Image (cartoon, rainbow, N blue to C red):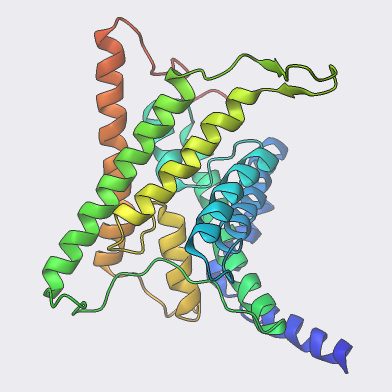
Length: 293
């Protein structure tokens, strides 16, 4: 029966979880109400981001359709979630700029990782149930790639691709969010009734440009997937390898998916601060780590 098949799929889905996922959820009970709110927001936003950016256009034969749907998914997920970070690299860089507390960084990254693992599992079972193609994810190439490069060269290329894409993404975030204004707070479409007034058009313009930037980076820096998001690289790796406690992360994985993009993002932050300080502006928040989030 269809009901039994559905229940069996649900049970298989529940048995897929391990301590990698359950321990962060158990720790949720120890958080204060304000911390739980931060955790929930980041968890749900990360899941929404993966669903809306990995699935749209996935089954379309046209590359242009897939690119278009990916851009729409990036904008839509950010708009619905209210601008969550959904990326440990961004979270760490914002901490370096003192726009996040250390406590908030731990909560957000835990939520991002838990959500990524949960979402890849859920998407896999959903795809299998409806006979759809499973989501893919970022991976480091095998020892030999099609060009015949050796293992060390492959890892080196992966490192610099993640470093460069992380740095450029943060530059785009700084410029599009803090430097440029594309439109007034509201915009009334000419020759139409007042009802046709766009609220905050600047947000949709800058977010669309951010989505286009992400797509360009994906195409331009493909060696390691790409990921440009440590959460995606790690949670997909854990999911693909069964998610058991026996799954370990190699030093290469941490170097490529965590150190490289975060280091690139921090370099972008340092250069941006130097640029702003040269103009007499201070972009580093004065907020102390002891303040409540």
